[in-house]
Length: 224
Image (tube, rainbow, N blue to C red; front, side, top):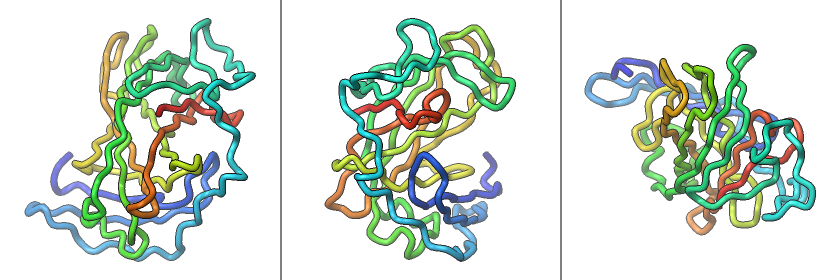
């Protein structure tokens, strides 16, 4: 992306299976690397959901939901180790369909200062960014060019959801782009998602993919 392109930070809000609130900011990155003024948010983000409102995520679910995929596909509620791949059918939009192997490779703690260029102000006060790094491999027969594999969020030690921060544009600490042209069978791309811990004493310890085909039943895939 050109250094003159618009960079936007959105959705510093309560993470959840439905969108419950957002913070929309924008900044223009100039040629000398500095950021312009950002729009002031009109609403504050909602608090993360309490543990009592979250689905029970056991390491060995007693009855994983059937997603209608092939034998050996990952099931909703299934837990994986870091670096372990989960394979499942994937759909993006109304026409792009295929199969991917998704792997969360690490969860890295950042520094509060990492958020300074985004000019989030008080909305990020005291919060610590964690970078959920993952890879996507095309294991199907269709070209998944320009699809986006999102819906990855962090979870805190008590099982509640961390706030998420989605960035439209470039952010060197956690780059994430749509799948490239010619993303055919065997191609792999790395990605990153940002989760915000509420304080330095609270850590993001696991990651969850809750996108298609798992978003309909409230049971995603967990890596920890």
